[in-house]
Image (cartoon, rainbow, N blue to C red; front, side, top):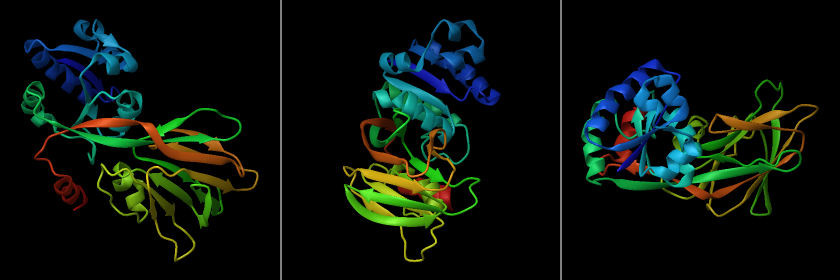
Length: 281
């Protein structure tokens, strides 16, 4: 097996944890590669001589271990998982909806990886592009969020679904999420929980001024177009709370299911419903 290692290199406890497990990996004779920035932070010869960038990590490895919290998993999904390589999250952060095992369970589950005793959960990605001054495409495993931020008024947000006008929200913003992201910001804004492997798209307004407005679930193949109306101001749209771009008055954004997806390593006895009950209780 060729194993990749990616992690939150800004936290020393995570860097130390990876160093500790690296010895076990070497003793098992497993071929491994480490993401370049992480290897530099580790500062040991064996890490540096096996360091490669994210794209090569995805292309060379059969599975990539991701050390960190859900934020690190979201970053790894866009940088590595987008190439199709399965990723296994080791929860070294907070809530841990996306991470599969704890550090204490890692050695046991590494043995299971070697025996191929695991399953793959395929999760959709969303992609967004704006019309006008920026031709970048952003990808999100959880969600795209438009939030008024420091803008002193509510936003007027026009939503068109599959070419048909749906609604104009008066709200503090809007969230367009995957089923995976339904347990993130959308849940806090009153959205429903979707089973994470569903391919649907969830639209959730943030603090809507209309009492009758509710979140909406649409088929995953539908294209959603959003247009924000504001005066002499720009606001941000973020992918998974990380990457993003600015939107000007009446600038249109198209959001749809991406042709790319992410494969997460899953162990059979870990039920989504058990995790949901534990995390939200």
